[in-house]
Length: 332
Ligand code: UT7
Image 1 (cartoon, protein in one colour):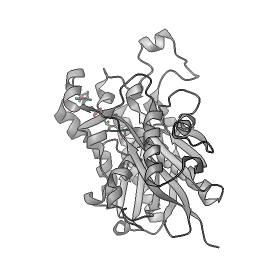
Image 2 (image 1 turned 90 degrees about the horizontal axis):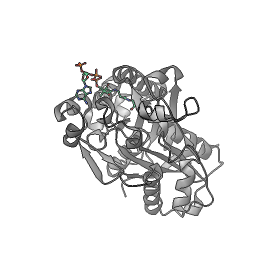
Image 3 (image 1 turned 30 degrees about the vertical axis):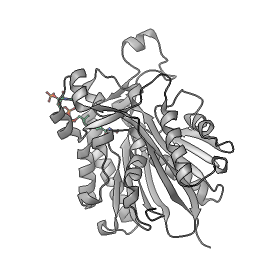
């Protein structure tokens, strides 16, 4: 019997207009453009400004553009999964809000929390619904408004993160394209190194938690860095080797955009040369669940049907993983 796979049939990103430059950050905390560029590769990032503007704004803008470019009626969508760690509210799910904003009246929708690996986890989950024959049109979103949980007095985190995201449409195909294989991992013992201390059920918000700045992302950067370099590179190499591919077979590596040095280490470990590595960290910083779809969106016009693409991520949790996919369409 012919195997049904989940093909990405469109991708769309969205970043807010406001550009937060390294120079502006120099006015806010004790840092400098040279340090940020050489240690992270980041030059600027986008910030979603305005009252009551949540992650749903980013997700909905991406999905609206996606539906338009793929000629899809919102009522045809079966399922929307939104990967995010910055939901509009603890509940309902941001995916529900996005579904309402785009008119996806027949879709059921839910959020998935896996930090920087969220898009990969959601992509794999969405693909299973397609492969099983359950659904025909699944939208997978990765979006974060990181500025809502960043302490702009903490120079070790505020220089890294930005707001943005993207969405892909998954549809069935019987061709040899689409999501081919994934290796996904998590390890909860990594939680102390990257987390938000308060605002959850363990430590609900109080005046004290606010005064102690416990509603912001807390990261022990150099520890996370060490785990990220090893695990992201290893899992990307593992998915390639498991499927009998070599570095020559890889058209593109799509690494999570957390730090240019982690990206370079992953590419080296896989034997992939720089021109095959998607990179936009310099413009958007680390948008957490948003980085991978934003890369695919930026590079869409250079992707050809049949291209072997390896996506890899590492993030809070710890969570990490790599997905091998074959691109399903030529530039339009
Ligand atoms: O996406 C989710 C997963 N997250 C990641 O993958 C992030 C992983 N971590 C990183 O990317 C890096 O660890 C950072 C970019 C966060 C920090 O870079 P680092 O090279 O690991 O720096 P460090 O924390 O070891 O700090 C080195 C020095 C310290 O000064 P001393 O102690 O050597 O005097 C810091 O105080 O750099 C100092 N420093 C800064 N200096 C200027 C830290 N942040 C800054 C800053 N500007 N913004």
